[in-house]
Length: 387
Length: 139
Image 1 (cartoon, rainbow over the protein chains, first blue to last red):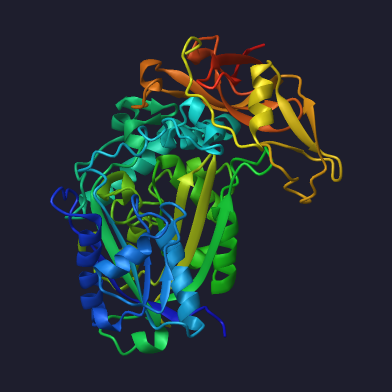
Image 2 (spheres, each protein chain N blue to C red):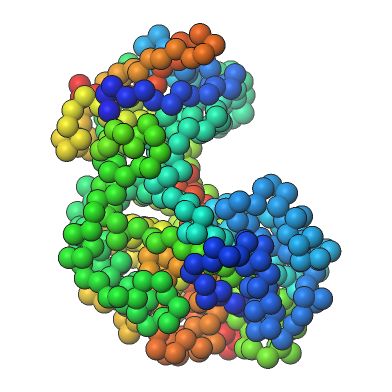
């Protein structure tokens, strides 16, 4: 049975909090579960599949979460491939539902990264007593550094400018200014980005995502069942996963996982890039958006700099990207893939007020997890309304 | 950063040859005698053909900067005390790239394509083994 169109997102919820020192991760997840199930017109008793990952959940954390929620699901998946995990969870849930292994899947994320003062981008590169990590940790590798290595190569090879990268941050901030729950809503300019302090050349402070608390939930079920629920079903039309790493020592660093996962998702959906109304793209750093747009095939590799300029990715442009303000301005509680799916669903259902993409019927969602220039995962979804 | 004490690497038996080689001032790479590829990082098997016909050889220690970033923020000691420093991939003349630091010059002078040579930071571990962390400096 073909997967395309068989399964739908039936409910979503983004926790409005950006600062939650009084909450635990599991508490945030449970609050989000309530929100998404209410949105779907379902109850916790309907859930028979549980998907989650977090910054602190251990390898068996999904079992602890099941206990916290007093769930005994027939399908469990604690896959953690970085911030893209939740985009992948939707794919895994769709496959399991389509195979008849479960019916109602709950995907959860929660984090108190900000209130716990987790320095995600520049504080986790310390000593790790791990033979694999030892090839990077003695050198002071940082998360932002791994993305900066890609940005530097892109600039050198194609003449991509810091102004072009900054344009991405400026656009995300504009979208955040239209989102009442976004953390950073004060508009910024290209000059503001370039004047912000350098973190890892060529990436400035404002080229980097913020750190917040937060969480979200997504309910996935069969399209047949979703049609009987209150909200318009958001169909999974295409999906793909991929990984990119150092191979045996000399990969093309500008070919990222999105190349493979995007090809798979577009092929399954049977749609073209021109059909896509808007994108939700993991924006850990400005370079992530540029490299992802190129590798998904919205423009050629090397042309991302001019592609993101002159308003194309802004609300009202030809391909609006990250209408919620993204990780650069709305929220980034450590891992943010779930918010890509949530905002895509809300946009497709026409619920986004001032930041709404008018008539948006087809979305491309892409999550990147891990460290772009060292090893990372990619997960792509094509989501759309029923014809 | 030239004088900084790097955190010491931890080796598995698969990676010990690399770090011990660095302790002697040598970059030890692996070549598969079945399919001919040179691979890094070290493994017990060839990642391409999964045979264990791996031979080790000493590389030239020469390469070029493939890409780099001057790091201005890292909260973790000892790096927090040696800012700014240069993270880089160096493409060895033998093919593989290694993640490393560029030392021995002003960070502002590092360029993609710049020829570099290995430069080792040796330190004694508690257990007396001589491991070294290979960095690179302008050739």
